[in-house]
Amino acid sequence: MVRISYTIDMTQRTPLITLPPEVAERIAAGEVVERPISVVKELVENALDAQAHELRVEVRSGGLHLVRVTDDGYGIPDDELERVYLRHTTSKIRTVEDLSHLHTLGFRGEALASIAAVSELTLLSRPIETEGVSEEQAALFLTLRGGEVTQRGRRARLHGTTATVRDLFYNVPARLKFTSRARTENKHIEHLLECYAVAYPAVRFNLTIDERVALQTSGTGDLVTTLAELYHLPLSELLYPINVSAHEYYKLHGYVGNRVLAQPSRRYAMLFVNGRWVQARALQEALEEGYRGLLPKGMHPLLVLHVDLPPDQVDVNVHPAKTEVRLAREEEVADALKQAVRSMLECSPALPDTVQFPGPVLANQRRLPGPRRRGLHVAESAEGYKAEIAPPATAEVIASLRPLAQLQQAVILAEAPDGSLYLVDQHRAHERIIYEYFRRIYAGSQCNEQAALDSHLLLEPVIVEMKRYQADLLEQRLPMLRGLGLECERFGGHSFLIRSVPNSEGSEQLAAHLQEIAQVAAQDSTDWQDSLLISLSCRSAMRRGRPLSAGEQAALLKTLAEVSAPAVCPHGSPILLHYSRTFLIDKFEW
Ligand code: ADP
Ligand code: MG
Image 1 (cartoon, helix red, strand yellow):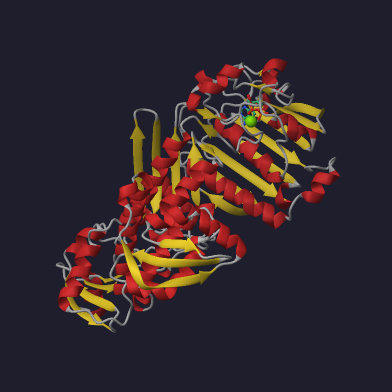
Image 2: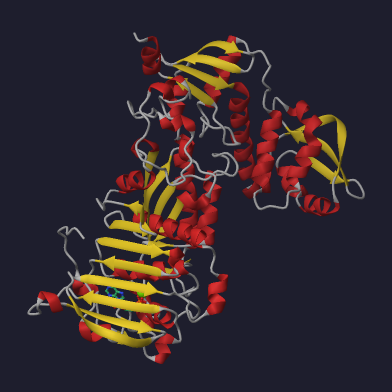
């Protein structure tokens, strides 16, 4: 292990104690070690709590044959090593009240006991203070099998701890049967380490799985560097920093990736509460609400967000594996998260500045380094991304565009003052404009009866037929539909009569789509309102194939520049494509 210089603050460490029963009883009870990944998680958390700066994790056969975590933390004094594997034994809390000013990841004093009971566990540790002890004798080790000590002795070691777990679940065949295949478990372990590496960028992480290096970070302390190391991509131009704080109550900080980094999985949206990788449903939902409509359906942003709160505002004693937390003012934090993510993605350009077109641009450009991208899906256009100018704020650029022509009656070709070219999809642009208008008025109508959208009375009312479960849902939602200018009433059985639609340029064309719109309004999902607004905007927006005069082109661009997310349609697809000036110079070899 390469040594780096740093300091360890021992002031937070208190001597190990076995919690008295009245304290132990008040700690969330339950199984800590359900799967190999739980072992890795507990050992990694112990190393981080011991202020390790370097952490090596070795896994074999999905963790069933071996899990070894080696750290350079403050170690365990000899007399304590003899007791650490006892239940409810911890150096992190002494009373239940200590939970309200907790600064460590662990506190239950149960992980080592639970691991020791179902495996062969060897703990080798040298405390940071071992003056007067010979180097060869400096570290004590203890091996336990099924919870009983089978061996103890001394070895040479630099300060820190190595926990080796072999033959996991050897004495619990039922658990073995339910452990997933090694490959699946490895994947989860890799993801877990990825999350910790991201949460602790100042710590060097190294994970080997069956002797293959699966992950390695250099612990520079810079999150962007860590992300680049994990995903083998120079991401700095594609990440937007978030920094929000409120009255010393909470602090949100981290990064949200540009839209090109959107992923078809939630695994790259990483949320930490006080340094803890957690599942906090309300926060997760708020995040998703924040990017809904700004990314294609089913896509999720790459984001790393820390929520830091005073420890007494976070209840960590909810779940035995400490993966769930409760926040005192959850709604407020959730709302801040939603706003932060939304505002970042709204101003994120649809595509980075110089890399819009696959093909020739890519062919000449350097491939990104790195053997493998850890499964990170990258939009083709990000591949050749090279930074020149921070990308200008999209709204500003759109406001400065001069329309030149309409292509295929679908796309506006426009020139920016710097000589670059933009292609603007007229349908998507209009859809975004209408969507934001509908959304604004609808939000107003939720808090104020007066603010409903104007309705446009249809020349002929339209009858729509619903399925039975849809009919009941739709009926409950009729008042909300009214706020949108949709006058709708039950017409007997499962039929509904729609008399009016929201007033916009496309009102009459909506009549042809009311069956589809009613289905969306009757969707059995929590985001039905947003889906409905998207459908209404899509069906009201001007179609491709509509000729636009020069004046109409300019008016469309002007209105687009005024919306909050002008680069992306409500379905999450790009509105603009950009040929930068540099691109033209490069391609023409001027
Ligand atoms: P907890 O982390 O909840 O206290 P554990 O069973 O995980 O409970 O660990 C028990 C105790 O062992 C810890 O409180 C800590 O004092 C000590 N310990 C465990 N792992 C390490 C480590 N890697 N470095 C230093 N001390 C450790
Ligand atoms: Mg622990």
